[in-house]
Amino acid sequence: MTYRVRMSAEVREWLSTLLTQDPEKGRVIGEAVAVLFECGAETGPPLVIPLQSALRTQNPGSALDYCYRRVLQLLQQVRRDVADLATARKRRELQISRTGHEQDALVARRRYEELVREEERAALQSQRLQAKVDMFRVRKEAVKANYTAAQARREIDEALAAGGEPGVSERAVDDMTAAQAAINELLQVADDLQQELSDDAANEGSSELRLESADLRLLFAAESPDIAVLLVVGMGQDWGAWYDEALSLAQAELEREGDDFTDYDLATFLSEYFPGEETEVRAGAFRLIELNRAQEIGP
Image (cartoon, rainbow, N blue to C red; front, side):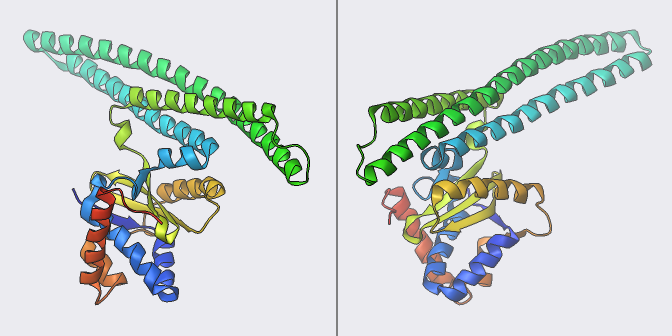
């Protein structure tokens, strides 16, 4: 399945500027974006990586925050489902009160009783999931604090070692190992919770277009099975620190999505950014697709 692509004003301006300043690099990035048009959600690693996976290696603390935002979004959908059942039940109550025919009233009453049971089950499920999400939030903050402290101790030891003092202490190594293990365990909890909240959770959320040869990261969200929204781009960054700001920017872009976004299909994208080079860019995209399938994309 192919994608249509929706680009924020920031990404459009960035790409236009890059094509002016460094046409060769802009062309390579255009080929990578063209892969999204051609392959859509079927594009996989190493060119496209789920954001949650990227964060685990680059910024574990941000990975936990991202997971928490995801489970909150999914929990909101569970609450909406409960509200929809309540609305359906009230409508059925009204129908029963207006039904004069005995047989029709009996059928309506049976459906009403089914809706009551469904609503009760859904409400209990929502409460149970809310408790799990609250517990995850508390654990998340504690684990992040421990990880930050362990990281600081290791950095102090490394700084002392650089000045001629003894190297990283065994305690610092053990603390860092334990902190990382705690993060990994909690990330697994988050995965399980997301799956419990939504059977489709693994296919939702944001991803990252990563092109190592251009030192590029481009965050995008699959708004629907056939639309990708390009949100935030970075090149040549300290990636661990970059994600903190990029995630906030991406969330803000999604919340205000509207007139600042432009929709493209592959033809309009190529004609706007690569006029006269459409055939060459598409050929480059197909080369990337083959390399990606062979897992051979790299620096």
